Length: 611
Ligand code: F6R
Picture 1 (cartoon, rainbow, N blue to C red):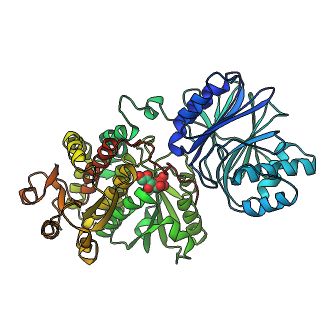
Picture 2: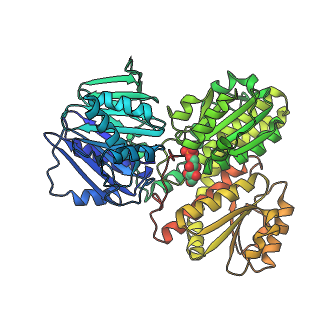
Picture 3: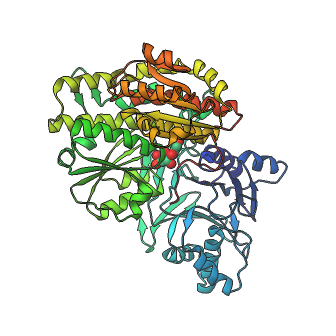
């Protein structure tokens, strides 16, 4: 949610910043802008995607060795040139970019208006910038000190980067709640929301923590806390290759990521699952196994697609571990004063590891003594760091805004955790345990089989692309997959879609069914099969169009459905890993058929770092 990038060093800053913005565009694409600092401070910004900014700058003098750029997901103020970042201070001396929300901006703005400040944008960012400038003037202090004083009064989340016309050799950055990575080169420094703009220049990085301030020159990095004490930067080496963040011949990142799933699931299992020995090796789980086996309750906390993974995991944990599970929207959990006991285990699920709602939910649970287990994709992200223990999903960078490979990796990791806990607790017999290990082991190959259906699914998409609405239904383990299918369709194709437990449709949604309504059934062979067959009959009786995801060889549903997608047989417990994939492909091909930018759907952004 908003991408930020900056550079200081001997190279030309603009090309580095521009390339970085293109890599970060998945975080927001309402507007973009750059500020370049040499003898003067120049700010250029424009509504729309980074390519539009780039076009508007052709022919301009963009020479500079320090600069910063921003790609915006609008919070305060509609997307337009005025509200685009970077913002300039009233005097024109400072420029700033910001990712996050300043919650007490209205109060600060009123104070500044009373002092005679005028604002040209509707943003909270311009308020914070002028607040900093005002402190600098009144206290007659340097920018670093003014930032420190200002941030003590700020309520909210931020990463800010500032340039000062009077100090062209320095960049100042600070963080609370939004991500910031510093890349350390030879006589140069890079800053960004994630490592993607940095990896082609250096693999040495420092993840800035909350309430830290970085003062960067080309050849010097000083890290301080808000109390002005120097900190020792913890330099880490990035385990990320450039190819992982490029499209690699696919039309879209989303398609590439869907097709990566045999490998990402394999990577997720690799070194952990050993079917011959019958073991699951997960250090973070093993070290805390008693917490899990003795948990009074597990609470899954997540948002969006990750929340759907939590719902599948609820079924799995209750079945295998016999521990009561609740699945919570992080945003609701945080604000409704939940009852949390020290014996509770919170499983926080997040692709980005930066989702603000999930972070605050974790903080709330921690305050109440709960143990936090993070299931996170992005290594070194905030959630990974604030959790007591965790397991990475190892899906690699997910750049398409709609989550795909992260979801199946989450399901894989959560299933392994549940199996490990069940084995330790003695709630699973050895035969079933070994059978499920075998099922997980076979997933990468079976996913490859599912992906072979992409052409027929593309044809199906062409037939249904003009639908105004769609209903997604499933039962048991496949119910959350129906929710996920509906979410994918909404996000990518802007078609209104609802997901429901198949039996629940009789209690209302069936009123929507007529000959125009496509109803997608996630109906693989499982213990609910007969029941879902009846639900399909009920839709057919009302002339609804049935598209069914079924198990290969299921002649009963083949005959009833208008269209079907047959996927390999699997145990019902792991079936969602397979049945989710036709949902992803259907949404993708409908979005493409409608001519939409599926990697950057309107109004969305990856990594939702505002509450
Ligand atoms: C949907 C999607 C979102 C995310 C949600 C949580 O395709 O990507 O619903 O799942 O914003 O994000 P993470 O998993 O990064 O916490």
